[in-house]
Amino acid sequence: MVAEVEVFISPEELLEELLDIEREVGRKREEKWGPRTIDLDILFYDDLVIESESLTVPHPDLENRIFVLLPFFEIAPDFRHPVTGKNVARMLTELLKKKGIDILTIQSAASIMGSIT
Image 1 (cartoon, helix red, strand yellow):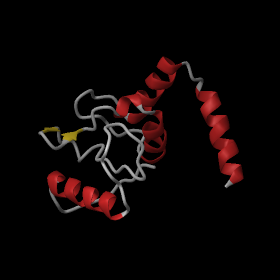
Image 2: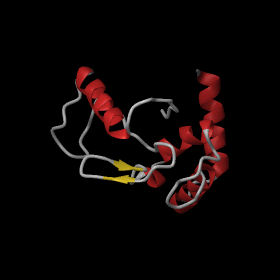
Image 3: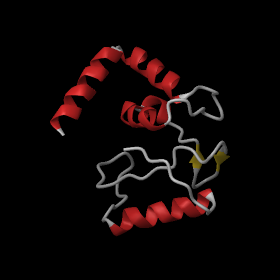
Image 4: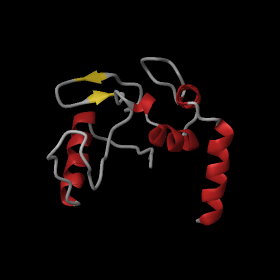
């Protein structure tokens, strides 16, 4: 799931709030890349580029994650990555092509899932 939210706090404060939510629902950070009950990430924060010890924005690996780009495409296909200049539609198209996934397959799967729910 991807959500667009409007906040009136800094990116660092937002990160702390997200980490608090993860802790409240029982997430334990025992193993890097390990299984988790919840994972809340800041993909973008307006057009800011942040690289600190605790926070990297835009999210460094979002261009390689179909499960992020597909729902992101549904809500903001024209949103541009502030570093690469690519919009979400282009990032998704390039990733699907790289993975050898036909866009019609995705559309068919989405149509089937939509009729199930």
